[in-house]
Length: 340
Image (cartoon, rainbow, N blue to C red):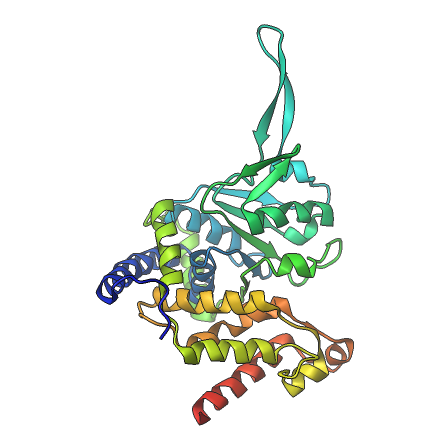
């Protein structure tokens, strides 16, 4: 079994137990306001625990904005929201230098920070902004810093972007390029709630009082949890399952699955395997387990891979979907593990 550091077994078990309990409390607090979206809450927390970013995809009215607002409160993070529009400029996100005249008549430039200088940024309808503005997020998402007027400025720690997209209305949008999609650790599909959950939603949100969120963590404890995720041991079987899955999803390679070779135009790179090994650790920690399993790999295969692959024209014409293809890869992986 692979260990992340030389920390004693008893110490790391105690730390996992304590952190898992606080994360369970945070998750329960979020679920008070975000009803019937347990999977979405889990995957969003996984993205943040991995130190990454999440792309929330769903039609309007499914509480995506409410989720980010609640996360900011519960995790103790300074949160900002940007509504992306076609006329939004990079300076509207990053900030700009302005020329000021002092009382003594001296003139000097002063930098005014943009809304990106926060710990949790909601990029609402990110695909409505122009590619030039979208690219303003690239450096920030990858390097946690921005360059303005030739000067590099460090963003607060931790720094996370949760972006939203509407999968239905694509008129007047600018699809995210592959390079930017790959910056998102997970694509989190937000589906309609079931009937019982929707009943609870309409009763909880149309009365005089609504459930309020309260802080459970702070930035310092969240960073400590992120470091713990990277120290969780990972079994060799899990590492091999991740490699088998990611490599099977790449067309034009010796390891490509036959269905992938026929249907996929491009597949995931090494960043997908990095994302998956972090995500399975975070899922184990969220669920209070000491080590991740192959079941975690299966559960997180779609959110890690779906935005890092593209179907060819013929496959789309036949009605194939990436979700269905990834489910097939996962089923074959599970069968292989069972036979081994």
